[in-house]
Image (cartoon, rainbow, N blue to C red; front, side, top):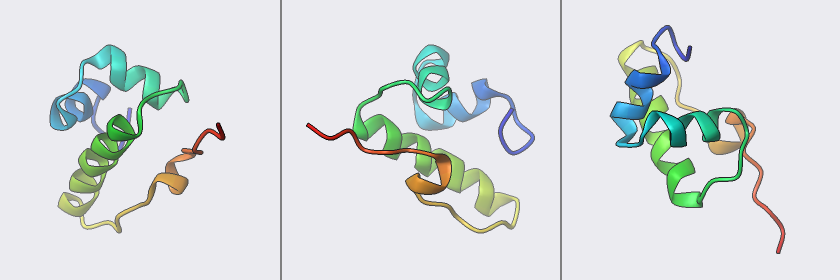
Length: 66
């Protein structure tokens, strides 16, 4: 559960399947665009609850080195 809502709500806000969102939430490897989309959805929920927005690093996202 994120911000008091289920993963289905965040996934729906981000336009992602619950499987893809779950992969991102659990720290799995996802495309940068999915990470950005998830961040936007989380920030929308934070703003609605009167909380400060976060950045990808706050969510534990680390870019892979190639």
